[in-house]
Length: 501
Ligand code: ZN
Image (cartoon, rainbow, N blue to C red; front, side):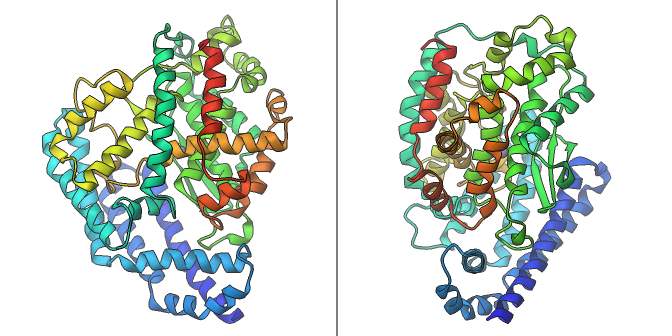
């Protein structure tokens, strides 16, 4: 059995090496590659993806997994070996159900559709991308059909991002949350909009980057095992547990852009850097799901980075960096500026309170499109109506409406959005558990110390990598299932005080 496990490990290591090489190529494309490299890079990435897929779905892997079953059954569920076999089997069984011809078809359609989208969005021409999106919906349904026996056609697609999560569970959580959020947003909208002009003067790029680095170093981001570079759309990527990278984009007339995206991506990176080093080169060496990953980025960005206690310590330092710009701006004005709530049209620019309304309507549209209850041609109008109903404003055109997010024009329809809001729900649930275990955490944050919080997150969440599913992890860490209570309490407390609700 030891020999078989060793063989499985060495096969998985090759797959991981190929995937990491592809990751490095993608990172290079998004940071330093000259435009002339685009075509060859797409081909190189496709080759690496195909090789990794072929190696992983090799019947020899399936045979090893079968032979290891009795061994796995004798081990405790949470042991490293049993978890490695279990998680690998789950991924293998999914991967072999999708024919490789379909994988290439989907990838090819994705790149063509993306190309069209990049042209039609600035031109505000939804009609030109409509047939591509119709095909995407069709392919998404076909993809789901490789996993018959589902409860909802979106379930197999959600499963890729969050194993075991079902549309019905998400729908239940979202309708509860929406009922709580809509009145909070309405009450805030009745009040004057906070003044955030102090964030929009001139802030030199180099100073912004240096300050951001100081902040995430204090969070616990390890620059010996990571680095930060510039890109167009910030992301985090990992080539090994010793090399976890983040990217940011800087605007010199907007202080919050780079600072909060740096904290966000650092949150993703802290998760990956905190994974048990023994899992290196295996499928266990990664965050367990999109929602748990997003819970960590949002925790460091919002619950820590947009809190008053955080700025009690860091605002005097930020003022030292930008004395001319912020010298006469009181902490309270700055705190209100970075927590400004405003109904807006663009999801990625939305504040903590309204953000989830953007996400939940996209999730509902995905279900309706997959169910066939909504036709792609009716989507722009449905979008405007739903924005009016949920956010009180409607986009003047499709560019800032149904064409704004890349997700549906690159990947599949289904499973793309729920992780963002589940991440918000979970970040509050995890943070509440952390402060229950260590009531001194908020006071430590106010002195610029994050060790207790970071260590707790490491021990409870990061170290396990992909060993536990989202549901198992939430149960272990918080003693119950995913629930919206802590998040609603957090929003009410913070914004109730800010807006005297
Ligand atoms: Zn994120």
